[in-house]
Length: 249
Ligand code: SAH
Image (cartoon, rainbow, N blue to C red):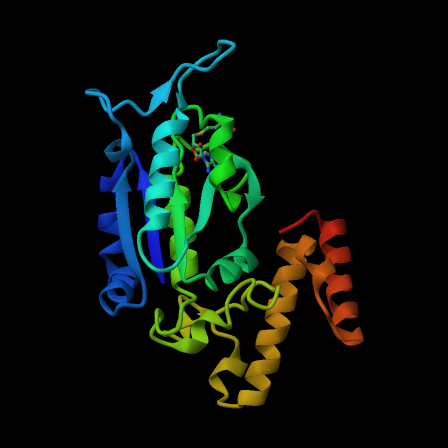
């Protein structure tokens, strides 16, 4: 996968994408990241990318010319047309299913906003607009990093163990089951004995139940979309009722 990012602070990306799993995946050629300085598409001495909003009001907006030129120029480079993503609190909320969908593109182009956001006409360039959540960041850089990370780790070979991306929270609509490592007894708190039993069938059943229990207790909003057996549905309904009467966690 090829990822292009356009930003006015391009220097923030390299340290993250050079380290750890992202760094290894990048070196292994699983994804290629090119970060571009939006100011390279300005034509004035001050390399201006912002201007005051029409109608008054606080702050500055990103002006359309450099953003249009950057996206048009980058889209024309290379053989594959990029899927263009902008970031904004008014966008579609990001989630694991969206990450999985984006992982299907060969080339992504992320455009990071700053200041009070962008001139509305810029959004014509976007194939989609993503929000990280209901809060306001100072810029789209963190959003581009979060989305890139969530997408790249789904690419074949990015994580050492292929299995690990499948078992995780949200991959089947549930939260992940509880996990434990050594020691089996830590300060008197013991790991559930079934996990030490070596009985793979029993462990799989325990994990499924742990996932269902946690999801019902912590994120009952996720339950509606799930396909559950009658027994499982009764199990989660009981937990939801109990936590409603006990007041949550
Ligand atoms: N005035 C805008 C916020 C601008 S914040 C508003 O009220 O909607 C500046 C930039 O940060 C945005 O252009 C966007 O690229 C990024 N940003 C801020 N919050 C974000 C969020 N929740 N999700 C994705 N991007 C966000």
